[in-house]
Length: 259
Ligand SMILES: [Zn+2]
Ligand SMILES: [Zn+2]
Image (tube, protein in one colour):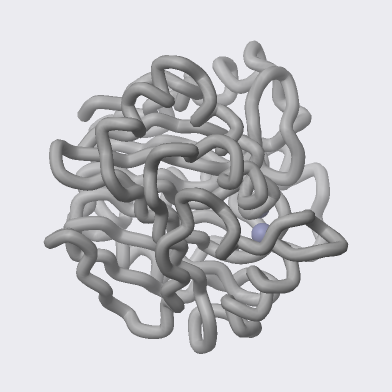
């Protein structure tokens, strides 16, 4: 499978990077993980041509914080010729009823259309169980420790997507065996040390490296990047080769990660 980051920021877009969204595809299937402002990139020529080769895109949401769903209304405009299914977490993977959230967000007064009016809309599917098969691909889910809930996603036991969570030993077990892990990195070790006592809602880079080490993961793509970091800061932070045996791949938006 190949990965194209569409949006890599947490919270808000900055320095040319959109909020969270990732395109994953192989010859037969196309998935999108999260629907932040990065979905706007589907209108870029190269990406539009790629998506147009597929009859169906499967879009999965990790949770409902705005940096992960702000792009949902864009689907009315950025997917004119491709159908999409939207997979939304519900209890026990979320504290809220997924279809209810989508119904509220994609209707007046927040948007003029309902999702059923979108040209590409096909089905709204709730994530309520730990496994789901989509076009022969195995999708596995775990609930992450995040306000309201967030869902860690693993595809074909190969790629794991873990965002909006505190460091969690359960994540280590979930990602074990993955070839590549997209994991949130919200703070540097120094930034975390400078703010002791603030409520812990995200992970620092050293904490993520420690989890990759424990899970014997070989490739890390840091995502949900802090919007305060410009490109120079990002290069600096992830240039540090803190451990051997781990390749840290810096995600560039609209560029393929082929691994
Ligand atoms: Zn977020
Ligand atoms: Zn969140």
